[in-house]
Image (cartoon, rainbow, N blue to C red; front, side, top):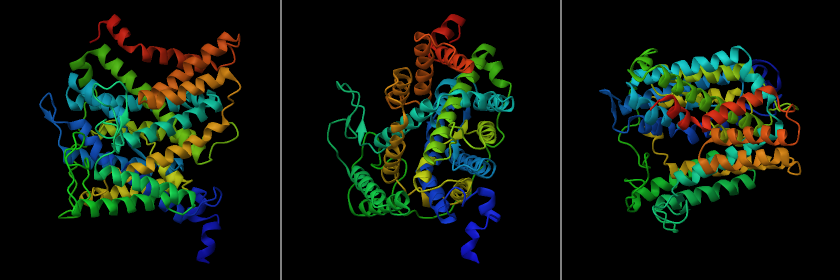
Length: 480
């Protein structure tokens, strides 16, 4: 009887459509765990970006508090996404968004004020969802552009993996923008790079041989290798990683549990940003956050759903209304938790690569985030060198969707090309989507087909034009 439970159409199977989507509970568990391992770095990296030793208006940011709150909000919103949206999408603090908050917004106001603007941003996104505008916008985008978004994200996360592993780097004063090796010398040096290379080779070998759990097994294997190397070899310091490994060192901790400090929850002010930074500046900040969050999330949701084979014949995401509302609510939760805007995470592709197809994988990922709250010292032994090979491998998986783009139709192929290349080249999903949208309506107009793009695409193109011209607009308005 137990063997038939997975196909009974009741219980977990009936709610999450496990059998209907051709997956199993075991596969969803593997996918959820793989997603967690590839994005667990956010529990460390987000506090690093947000704190960085700054004291915004005498509001010191505690690293342990930020770390605990980051894990808690990610776990709660990922659980809600899994149960409410039934997609293998994990949610956590957005790296591009937290950089905007930390370096652009927070220096002009207190941290609670900045978090208040994040809450308002999330409420604005939820309003777009409730009115139906966000879904209409997503449905108005041509399928080839959606596929280009997936491909661009694939290249982007593969590049992130290479950079974070110090396999490539931007050399100072060199004629090339990037170079092989962590120091930009054109040479691979250091044991962490060895771990990355071995982990990447292990990942692709397991993928080619169709080994179940390939990505997760490669992360575990590379971590074991890193622990062995760290305990038996001298790891020289790196300018990019003073301890040689980065934020997470592969060594067994003195203790495996710790109590979470959640005192940052609820420390936000809805009106303080308008008082301290000015109304115009605050509005510009909110607009920037909404625009970045809106299209980063859209690209991630479409890309992950496409890779999982969940888009319908018109390229639409199932349960898209609920999914978009939950994503907007995640931004609100990030502000309430004082950890910046949360959004759908592209590292969810690691779970999809493991075969995850339902929200049950996200439920498992959420459980691991909950565990991480108490076992921070233990999961922190996974160094970036052991986790980043998964990003490169998943980049390949997303790249395969390039075959669906009609390259013989230049009016859509060129926007797709710009979408794809600008994501990794500008280190921004938003920039790639914006370039694709603007070029699409321009080229259709040049063909005398200005009415072919949906009116909302024209509005989006205008907004993106304003986004790219934000600096001169702020200057014209007298905004610093």
